[in-house]
Image (cartoon, rainbow, N blue to C red):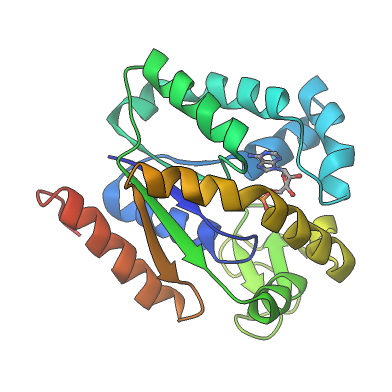
Length: 221
Ligand code: AMP
């Protein structure tokens, strides 16, 4: 099953995608994660992307498409995937269609996680990420047991540079400009399902799993 999770930064796409990928045993492909990995590795792509990311701007479409194409060629993607953070604009959606066609794949379900601006800003500016395993925490909503230390692997927690309030607001502005046409695109293909992401993560996950099951009732979710 091939699923796209859409929604503003901070709507919880990453959290939901990780859980859903676990439940459905599908790879979670997050372009933000792939880009951050590339930056950390000091790869050429990461060097070209970093400045855009630090400013909360979109990395040029061609760079992201190249990176995604390489990931899509991996053998684990053949059984399906959960795509998170891509597409982010209409051009990327069209690129994705072409890319998937080349691999003989198609999108089954697009879930749009809707969230209010105040919830997003609160979520993102308080988010802490583990430098070891990538797990997410929140200063207030989900604090780690030991300040600054990951519950799972003992790694150091840090705040993403693009989670500073000014950059979060910029990311939201970019999101609003770019995604309206994207939503219309998937609506016209009758693939889009909207959910409120302001509820607790478990309820949202249940609703996404239900949508997946409606699409494929052989799923054990
Ligand atoms: P995310 O982890 O999805 O919030 O992404 C973090 C940052 O990576 C974004 O603010 C962009 O700078 C960049 N990024 C991630 N996915 C894309 C994409 N599909 N297109 C362009 N830039 C992206």
